[in-house]
Amino acid sequence: MTTAELDADGRLGTRFWRVLAAQSLSSLGTGLHLVAFPLLAATYTDDPRVIAALAGVAGIPALVLALPVGNLVDRSHRGRLMVYSDLGCMVVVALLAVAVLADVGSLWLLFVVAVLLGVGELVFGTSLYALVPTIVPRQRLLRANSHLAVGREIGAGGAGPALAGVLFGAAPALPFALNALSFLGSAVAVGSFAVGQDTRPAAPAAPPVGGATRRARLAAYLTELTAGARFAAHHRPIRTTLLLSAGAGLFGWMPEGIIVLFAKHDLGATDAQFGLLMAVTAAGSVLGGLLAPRLAGRLGLTGLIVWTYVGYGVLLLPIAFIDSIWVVMVLFLVQGLPLIASGAAIRSVQQAAVPDHLMGRFAVLNRLVNALTMPAGLTAGGFLGAWLGLDAVWIIAGAGFLAAAAVCLPGLRALGQKRALDAGGSGGLSRGGEG
Image (cartoon, rainbow, N blue to C red; front, side):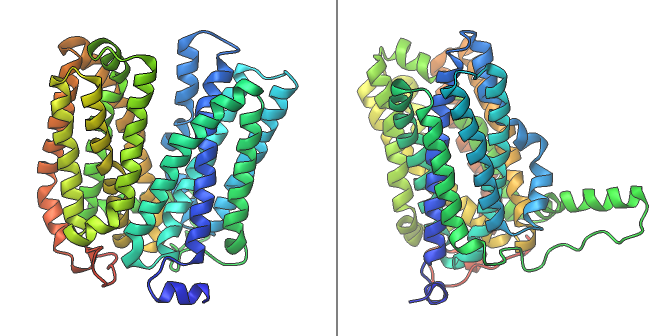
């Protein structure tokens, strides 16, 4: 059966499975350098501020370059952009591996590499977001996004970090060499179909008229950059999904900043128990991602979003009143179930509603929301923990999730009224409707 036939009969299609392989390999590389970078930096300095700054600079491109990258994605071959991004990252990481092997690495080199990889990840992720709804039937978006989220979690959250520690202990250059190979594998997987096909949007925005003044050209370019934001401002269900993402970023990251102190001081966890505590959440999220399409078939896509947000908020509250590490582990396992499911559901809603020629410029809005709310949540969690105690952070975070769901309820109701957004049904998903 051909790819076209697979797509036509409602299956995910061979192109999607190649994209899934590419993203999983890329996520493995992300997991590798998330652990290998600080380990390598620790060989150059023992200043925690420098190592923390190294982790933070990778997020700078999402703040500075998000809008131009979104516009680029909407004017380019999205699959080819993913290939070019992978190849660029491969070269950067391979050069770093050579530098480490030759013992000529340095802190400034790590900062440069971190920023370049941040740019590559921004281009790759935005292009992936925009490409998926063009190669997957709309009624299968939730299943596709769930698979992608599971692959990302396994690569970046499990296999990559575990491999990085072992490989770095054997030879510091090894995790970076494997990272380069993962980027190459990702490029080959996407390039196997994207290089010979035009994956640009069907109706790209028209370029500015030639001969205009510099001010007019600048105004036209700024109008292009902000087209995704203007669409979201006039589309109630889409505004709701962004608000939900902002709430998840703010309140979801609050406990992350104090979780090690909470586990050590309040629960008396050993190092091994803390590691297990973090692992069970990832295990729960993978299970939730695999179950998401089945749950959406019972609850509908809107119902899945509501129940995952409310469920996550409710599960945060009792942690403040428990002093057993093992009971908290059980809660963390269950708490992980909504993570991928809610994210995949929201992404599917967005991809179904946003016009194809705006997909890249809208995708970067999610990036900006995450880039702004994650550090705000971490910082707020630290200050609240110092002022009110570590237990209070869990209560505030849980109440915040529930409040965000309540504030978004009218928008979620509007979303539920859109006939085509029922992921469990067989109807297509409509795009571009104003709410």
